[in-house]
Amino acid sequence: MNEGRREIFQIAIVLVAIIFLVKLFFIQVLDSRYADMADSNAILRQVDYPVRGLIKDRNGKLIVYNTPEFKLEVLLKDVKKFDSAKFCRVFELSREELRRKFKEMKARKEFSPYKPTLFLNQLSTTDFARIQDYLDEFPGFYVQARTTRAYTTPALANALGYVSEISKTRLEEDGTNTYKQGDYIGQSGIEAFYEESLRGKRGVSFKLRNVKGIVKGSFKDGAYDTLSIPGHDLVTGVDLDLQQYGEFLMKGKAGSIAAIEPSSGEILALVSGPSYDPNLLTGRQYSSNFKLISSDTNKPLFNRPLMAQYRPGSIFKIAQAMTALQEGVITPETRIRCDRTIIDCHGTHTNEDLRGAITNSCNPYFLGVLRRMLNKGVINDPYKDTRIGLEEWDKHIMSFGFGSPLGIDLPNEKRGLVPTPSTYDAAYHNKPWKFSNIYSIAIGEGENLVVPLQMANFVATIANRGYYFTPHIVRSIGSDGKPLPKYEERHRTTIDSANFTIAIDAMQQVVESGTGIRAKLKDIIVCGKTGTVQNTPNPDHAVFIAFAPRDNPKIAISVYVENMGQGGRAAASIASLMMEKYLLGHTNRPYLEQYVLEGKFLDPK
Image (cartoon, rainbow, N blue to C red):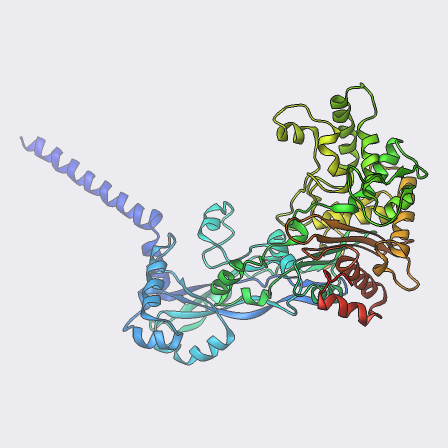
């Protein structure tokens, strides 16, 4: 009997010991609360935020830099005798806001009363100056310095993008554990595309505190501290003076300007109108300002050079001409009568050759060109021949970079549309279609869609006589100044270089004696093409593409101005001033600048 009781007693002791061991294991290994409590009594852990990389223009001018700001953290276990009324007065919060802040803080997954937790973010230097004398009255609250973005100019906002606090959704998607609650992250533009290069790497420091919570110095002389690593600086290909001038010219207008250096593919200017001041999306007013900007019906956050998809209009006739020359269905001497029974035209020309047709932007001529391209009589079936011809046409047109993203180093680039046989199969529900159903693409109307960047890239390709570099806004990362290798590759078209010479001859005539005469510059040969895009029932859109000089070109540009009528007015004038500004460093035609600023382009005079 006693023997049995002894065994039961021994088993009970063993079970109790196991329970204690398991509990100790949970306390010391799995549950960090007790370690946090012990550490937080003596050691304060502070994050050392890295300085985000600077952004400069091609001439070294600073565009984006960093300015000090502060965040308020709280160690909840140290909060004692909290005077909420005074806290609200000092930090300019309402009681409702204060309660919401505490509620949001406690709801965070990583919240612990024994660890510093973000309470207020984006305190400016003015805020800090106001509150610093009161901080000792609120035990448990600590201010930590960090930096935020600042801008030397409101220009280039849509391309630069903005930085803001990482969202809960984005934080949950961060599988690398790079970001923490309260961290900043690039949300659009360069800031988002080059986030990994710009952000740097955080550090951490440990401070020793006494029983009153006063910091007495570094823990173990900083043996466990790690320094933050600054982000890499970016040098762009943008000419800041040219960018600012472009935004000046586009003031009060909707549209875009895209300018490229043909020899490198570097973006010289990328203007989206209307735009916004990037300084509005920094600091504590970010949320309210973002709400105002994003709800603006003029869509200032919409990056038109990359995201707007328009019909190209008559500038597409240049691509049509080179494609037809390549396929051998016309020669430079081919004449096609300006028969306006099917499609209307303008001017008094009657029977032009190719150069004359481009100079006068003859619609019936290019209708005839596309008919010859698509109806070669390979099978003598108008439906099948059109399909075969369109497949050949697509191959050439797409080689210019139309119909797919070019790969610029900015997010949200759209692809445009080059219609293919499958496009029309879907449109006609797999019923037969032929040339008479699709001829409007001959003059850049119909199903054709391009983005303004593609237009600028197209004219850069013409300037290079048959090839282009992927357009890019950042020239180099870091201090070595070397171009990014992927942007040094040449992309060649399917068109022979001789055919580009013919197109260039015609584009020179367009500016010197045709529809683009407003773009003419003294002592500089400009090659360009106007376009007027139908926009019923509203006024037409104005389009112009150009490059200059003709030999050894330095700039290729596209201008698209919405609802402003003929391309030879608004778009050609703006492009001309931009080229003059870049090539000469100044402009010599105040009368033309005044004409652009007044914006009376629909006036028939």
